[in-house]
Length: 525
Image (cartoon, rainbow, N blue to C red; front, side, top):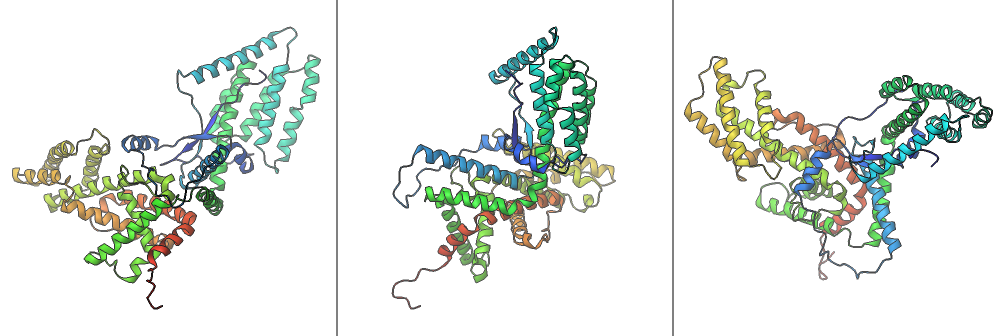
């Protein structure tokens, strides 16, 4: 055992969603080149919205991928081919996550408390540091382990530097000159404490500002072994900072390369599995059929020629993913890596529809008396949002929650009206408000269907206007949820645009086959 096992790090996954690590630049902070090297050593870990994702996974059965129609006879593949395919899909998923999840960042892995892995790690680390301490207490001291630690620290410090940091590189090479340190150890002239202080000072000049407190704590440690142990812990954190800074710096330049990489990997997968686009084809075919049926009913202009252009069909197909039955319908293969994201957005849409519907009912029922009262809308919005926060959990009862909400809103509105000199709620108005609130749970509720249509139309308009960078006008009745709706539209459009960038060649071929009429043998051209 020559060096302490390095702390594992992992790569965080997903969503929201929200802070991104941007270390301010000190001397040596620009370390993009080394970020790629370190980020390859990381494993995935949950992002801030993982709690929502766990709830989605817990409530949604896995999509059925069986009973795939066989377009060609199955062929046997070797274990090596399967492993290579799995590796390619894993790499594709990681590259995709980096691009679409702007909250993606590297984080240190935390082994579960009381787990066997954690216990083994603690025992091994303790054994190593006890051995190092015993060597340094010998007379004369033995520096074999210490020199190997210094060599590892030197390599880590040098990895933080860019080619332009010549002065820092020369200084590290001069002070941590391993042959010279070996000679000093052999002659009893090695001062580990002095070298440790130099290392701490160099770490202070290379670290991100968020590590300043950690560096100051290192300066307070006087014993050599605890200091070296703490140095390794902080160096592990600095590696994480470097990887995150590199990801943030290079992400704007990776869009096209990542799209080409994903497309290439998917093409390789498609060549090994010819039926890998069956559900995507069905998804687009169903969308065309729905648009034609809606046009025939006169409910939309889908019968007009422009409405069945490939781009319009495709945008409507993406919008259908926000109304998907994940429990029974297989998800299209080309958006499968983002299924959890679409489920989360679907739940957000449902919550915004219900929230806006309830607020519209409140203001319609109560009348002009409360329309101009400052702060009331935000108060009512918070009250409704709290009551609907768990609407997608298995234990949520919509009827009970809406009944409780009706009682609470009647009390708050009565108090508000009394405070501003208006006549309090009458029993009839309270009963009418409670009845309308309870009725909102019905699928055919007029107000709910109206607000759902407006939200869907806004998201569709955002998708159509995303290329022009001009947000569409907000439909009536959605002003109370405008901030949340606009944020959702931005995330939805960004995800869709990247998916189009990756899979557009596959979509073009499929849509051409669907939308091009097949002529009978006797038809004149």
